[in-house]
Image (tube, rainbow, N blue to C red):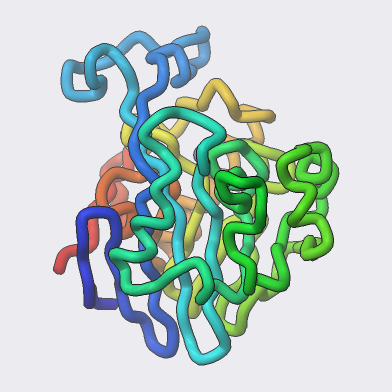
Length: 264
Ligand SMILES: [Zn+2]
């Protein structure tokens, strides 16, 4: 896997038949109480963990391009959440692509920073040529309950573990953060794991959970299981909220893990 292109908001790696591009939707911060230990809010922060007393949170989406089309995994926050997000269009342009080129979309889950970018500022389809939008069966109700997603509903396709939204890409169950949270394995080499990790402290201390995990115990177990699997299989990893550039390699260090960003 090698880096073939890098811009301020994007980074592209080449696999065999497919390329994967990280697209930075923007960066925001969250309250320090979002990380949870066994006794409630985590309090063991070192100075480098926080920015102005808050947790840094980059928001990323991923584009998988190949001979069979162009799959967008997650769509960013659009204009629906924090200021500074909703820059997916700019990231796509920097990467040499554009919204018209996206032929299929798959979501890791239906939280606001992953689905909102499916509609543009006027409420229309942001990716008009994406004829299918895959969402885990468990989260179809949550998706349908979101009024801004009405234009997308005719394109909705239920997704189950093992399904391939595009040849070479397979959905992998990763529940806990949300009930139908899905990771995507690309060419059996790169696991795009969505919100398995929200802050690097969850690599150093994988037992820490996130305030918005819908089932924290399940999220913790899924993280432990997938970390093991990534190392056993020798997969590279990519994550929505991993540090720059959001693609790299996982290493075990005792009970902790370390993320090594992919290098040019
Ligand atoms: Zn998220």
